[in-house]
Image 1 (cartoon, rainbow over the protein chains, first blue to last red):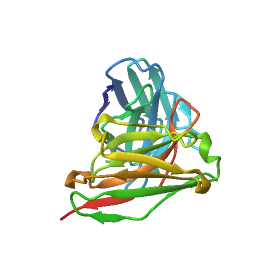
Image 2: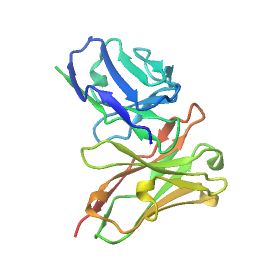
Image 3: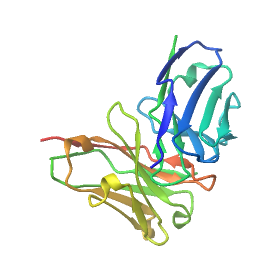
Amino acid sequence: DIQMTQSPSSLSASVGDRVTITCRASQSISVYLNWYQQKPGKAPKLLIYAASSLQSGVPSRFSGSGSGTDFTLTISSLQPEDFATYYCQQSYSTPYSFGQGTKLEIK
Amino acid sequence: QVQLVQSGAEVKKPGASVKVSCKTSGYTFIDYYVHWVRQAPGQGLEWMGWLNPNSGVTDYAQKFQGRVTMTRDTSISTASMELSRLRSDDTAIYYCVRLGRDYDSFDYWGQGTLVTVSS
């Protein structure tokens, strides 16, 4: 099974900051890496698929990069609505697995 | 628009079973796999398995083998997930999710169903 490790597990930042979250897979997953945003009491929402493709309707301040085992999610200029928990997920092979999440909090 | 609407919250005793339904609309039900993901209180996301609504074929995470059954009723575009022999650590929100065409990403999620297992 493929293990996904995210870092950091939590992050404090201010509106306007640039933030980066990393995700590492235990083996190569090509670009089969997706990012989700989850707000309290809500279902996760797809932000980025195939490592770097922006899901329709997602603001362009979100971007993703990477391939193989190392991936990043970047938010170029934090907005108030971006404070949430972010998860990476590999869809290379079942069992599909998620990172443990990164909680982004307001500084 | 694509929607996945799940059944309501459940409270069950240990050892019982629960069945969660997921009614889909806004797309052709048999054209997209449905996956199930759960989230224990304050915890991360855990993949449970998938259902091919066209054929009925399923694949389950090893952790749930023997306890989970995923089914569908194509006449009403609804997928269901039944979990048996419930334990307290099965207390979680259960989500049905549509598998999109783009690199197997989860593009649409149900609203979630809270299942509480308590004596």
